[in-house]
Image (cartoon, rainbow, N blue to C red; front, side):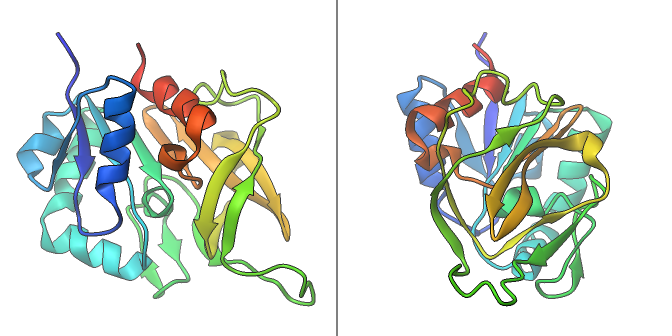
Length: 206
């Protein structure tokens, strides 16, 4: 029996690009904002592009925060946060000065360019990741890789235990995290061609 993969629709980002990539990889998925679909999922994907505070507000208004907490924290359903979706898993964000889902001990901060005027924000385009020894999600990603990024804010945490990868832009920042059934990537696997497919397959399995 095939697993039930739910892409969470909370009004932030192009969800169809994720669904198209999964379809190309021969994974069936549904896009839904229905709490019952989320709590009955075998795998959950939380994509997102846009403003952190708007995203949290949308999740609240749709009644999805309780559903996500039930699925992820109680039922231990595997979840993959993409870009903003990963950021929402943190405790707090400077963007709008609002609290996140609080699943992992981290905050989300804006890139500090200071005197490094050769760098532009947002960080947009192709960049590599450096895996840590803590990652199961990225274990099949080769050391030489490229992923597509577009973001102005990034994770900041003192807890290195759950960091799956780092990326260098202006300075080193956290580009992937994982803790038990909770996974997050700052890059867009659905836009990262073969390397992105390796990550998605690592999350969804065979």
